[in-house]
Image 1 (tube, one colour):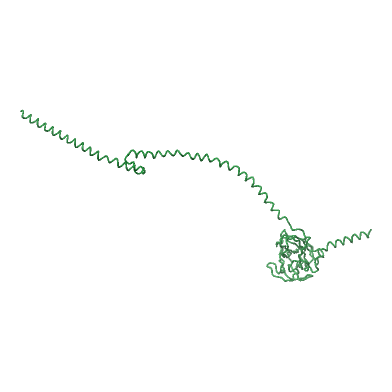
Image 2 (tube, rainbow, N blue to C red; image 1 turned 180 degrees about the vertical axis):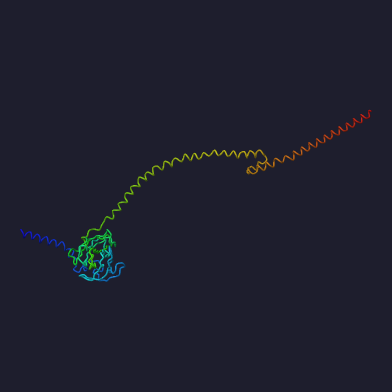
Length: 337
């Protein structure tokens, strides 16, 4: 009975070891020589360059700081130099490195860090590795797929720092981040190697992004009732104006203005003589009336003068007759005496 239990325990241990080693088994003992590795300057042996606000950062990598004020440089105290050091003289901090890598969209990838080694071992000093499938450079982005924080050791006996994700586009970003929460004087962390290799077992790329394209559909349904409502009421009012058009035609009584021109024609006819000049009625009628009234005046005066002269001659003849008669009567009367 005890032999069977011991055999079962040995089998379980063997299965546990088999399940724990595939990730390591497929990687080369020289991690940066792993087939398909895409990280440039994987072992930090291509040199360092100054980065403003950070210090000296490995070529092809970029340093970033989450909290505190650590310094980046190439001083190495790790099992596999050269390396990237992040450190502070007594201050706590959280910081890391990232590198953007050109990949194939939709392909799965696995990122792994070799040594993530602290100055002093403490449960508060932890590290992790992540992949941004969208290729972003913000270490606080929710798009980053991180592994859980693991306590940093002189070796990786507490687990392998690695993570899997599939690329959304043609670029992914690999992050290696350390958090120092226990002060041991010079709070130093070293990174020795970082790789990124294709991995078909990685989960598919995140696909909730197309969901917002469904939202435009509801707005297209709302305008439909408004279009039908506007179509039905508009035509009836437009048919009513025709009767108003016939009413506006009633100004025909204004033809009574014609009689106003008729009197002018009658007046011209009354003058009788200016008939030929009937076309310029408004201009000729007043002038002709003015010239016709004075023309009879000389004839009338002449006739009156003739009558007056004739009267005066007759009167003088009568006076002469009377005078002669009186003279004859006086002579007779005198002779008689």
